[in-house]
Length: 217
Image 1 (cartoon, rainbow, N blue to C red):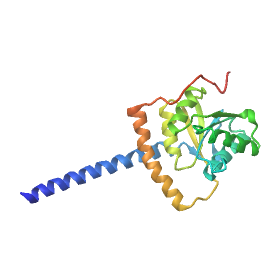
Image 2 (image 1 turned 30 degrees about the horizontal axis):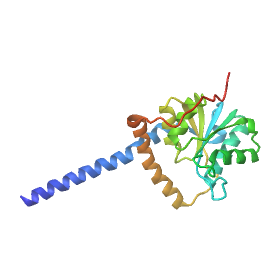
Image 3 (image 1 turned 90 degrees about the vertical axis):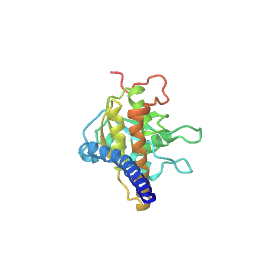
Image 4 (image 1 turned 180 degrees about the vertical axis):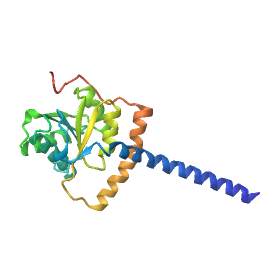
């Protein structure tokens, strides 16, 4: 009798573990499959009026991290090559001394992008918030999303699920440490599960405000 109980408990544990693992992996597989044919290199990207550049952290001196410089450089190249008319730079500005959008703007200007071609979103604390606000606040209906390959499937899933038609452009100008890539991909695995919960269950409303359309025509 005792052996049967132990086997029964063990089967429950294995079943629960398998379902949990499937729930962790499946969203990532779905977004990867969804995004595989709408991700482009810079030279091959379609044209759009707007490119959305996602924040990715600042260094202690307030300058963009390497991963964020990659994104801004890619966005600048899209603009300078005539692929887009405007760059929407979305990042975190929860604190006075931490201003991702402004750091992104300054770096883009140093690369030759005119200030009038840049729009800043100071409340892009999460990928979900950036996608939501791009449409709700800035009136963006379609865009190119500029970020790294590991982040693009989730970003594309979120923007398209929120009604913003999007394609992705890889920002992979640097070689990163394998350890960093491992950490980012593990984080992305978990964040993708969160993205599914946001879209299909929680449906949160981010910080909004008055509308500021990028284009008035």
